[in-house]
Length: 343
Length: 291
Image 1 (tube, rainbow over the protein chains, first blue to last red):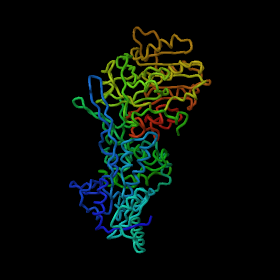
Image 2 (image 1 turned 60 degrees about the vertical axis):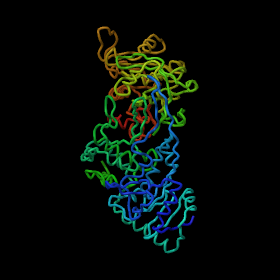
Image 3 (image 1 turned 90 degrees about the vertical axis):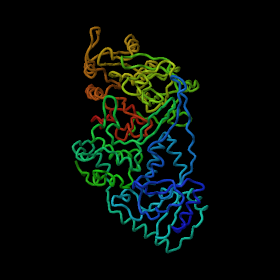
Image 4 (image 1 turned 180 degrees about the horizontal axis):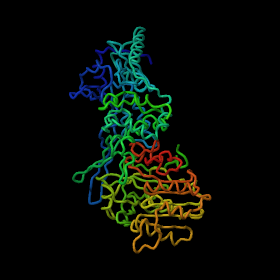
């Protein structure tokens, strides 16, 4: 499928066309200074001037912070009626997802498809089209290139837009993307200059990533130092278990299941949780990870050792949100780079 | 590192194809085991499901008290009992307290069977040494009853069971049956007896060392409070059991029960998906209190 391009001035009309078939989501800077994906209001195009990621990761559109699983009703004392949840049918289109967030979704897929299918997450995934946009000016905290990523990586989305100034060059990578392109207007042909500008833009943004991380011997180094309590207590010393890193991480998926009921009508909810919280693993007689250093160790090793053992991929895409948002400047990149070669 | 306790053929029974929807089950009988533990006998409202439902000893399920929440408990009956299922629950928190307030006829939710199971193929033809402490006997009961129902497939059977006080001993009716049986040797002990107690006194790991069951062609199966399990492993090794011949079943705080919510992991293994049955060989690196 040959690439096409579109002028930035025509984006609003393109989105309006798509809005007839899908619910369109675009990045927006909310009044409390938090940027996230919201339903497109029909005219906003401020996000076209953005060059890097939203604060809130796109995972929240697939794994919301609170989600109803099903409802039930008390018919008599000790007798309940279960209401089956309705099938998710809403077709959605996310415009402006960055490569790190898109890759994170493919990492999450592995968990939610493994052995048992999670209907809530997977139905949202199959009903959503992803339109990626390459970053032109990554943050200081970004390190996607160290984890097999790239600020212009087009592979985990349906259509990928590269910013070349006044225009976007569009690449398709999936059937769904192809179909969408064939129905869209305002698309122009791409010429030699455009292709050169695309290559240059991608190279330029990749060069702006200044952080490095050696992932080659990471698993070995972490496994060797795993039982060293003193080391981990030092690493965990300044962490305050606030959980911000987990709540804004695009690959974190820990959740809680709880019931609520009022006047005989109730529902079961799934809500996002955090392995950093002290009571996360609490049992009646003991708490396996009551000590902070165990929780910090578990978080690091879950992403860089356990997930690779189970699924063959590091559960981190280098988006850098945890580094930017941590209130005590705990830096995972630095922790991993400083791991001793020998114990 | 899935080892001998892996079963790749899991028979699942998701309600309406949704793994988070529970089946409705009705409580048929409630048995008081100790002053804070009860056994619930229940069967599915859907009779077809009750006829077709099957599981393997060692598996657990997520039980719902609607409006309060869900909790994981072992299925403590044997799959050879076809007309009902059993779970044994100690009253420790919100869901378990609510469960204890339910009586015969009340409806609960059931999601399962989840987890792996005791490696029956590996155990067949061998001698079995069961070591259980307190409410840990619940997790082994399904296997013990299964083995007793298929007695001629196994060689010698030893059970060493202990609790803190005589009133903490569970499944007295089973203990009586096993004591009277000539095909199994059972030793019951308490940490501290009372005026009526005429049996042994002593902690389970110590009694185990005194009794010193034979390790010839034998496998040890252990369950109890974490501290008891940790103290029993070295004793078993000293007696001559190798780590692949020591099997245990672990317990963790769980929510989804299907390896997605991330809570119950020991390293890269999820207790709900790769366990709860493990060999000592699989978890020995995490012996430092994480389980």
